[in-house]
Picture 1 (cartoon, rainbow, N blue to C red):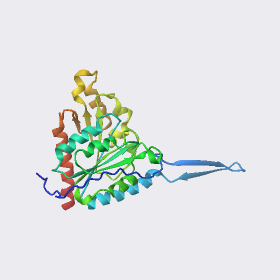
Picture 2: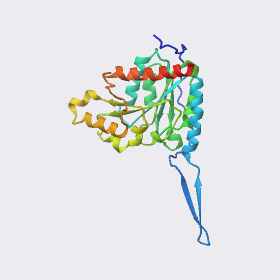
Picture 3: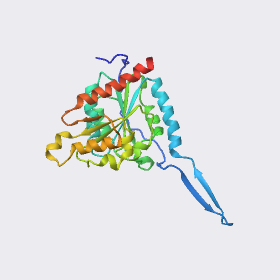
Picture 4: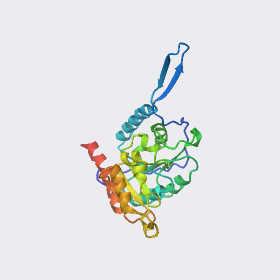
Length: 265
């Protein structure tokens, strides 16, 4: 059953990987100090890379809003279960919510191939062709989105490059950000990498099916998340068994639905 206000459109399937040249940099202001012969100093400051990215992100936001597409930026460290979580999520919400996925990786199309098995349109971005970037920028998202029929989808999920640092710094024009933390990682990851958890709208605590076999303090992990981001919604899930998926799916559906309602009000 379609959610009220959703567009009913046909799928298309994009099988080609798509690569785009882009210089690697995630620095803020870059200062160059030149010592002159009279011993005075001339300081040249290069324009902030993030400012350029922010402008492109705003353009992406306009594109997504005009096409009534909700964009979710999914981030995590490598091995947290991001792709499996995405596979299971898509298997539940499809075809109720028409979706597409942009996958970011340094090399290979392995994750994109797995997601393509769900039948949704997938576009791969490999960053090895432009320095092996550890994040996706608004520029490459705009290029990848050109390969997706925006009129045919309601939800675009971006599976960002596995990293708990750089992806949080770059706005790509998304509507919401989700971070996945697995119980096979340290409980203190949120306080070690606070920007990621501060910038996200929800957290998924994944692989809870392994808790009986691990010396892991789940409550400490939750406390560390809330220390950085009080009141952040946390969904305890197992991407392997689909345990705990109902609250997560309900949250996602509500966020997508609310964008459509706001657009038509």
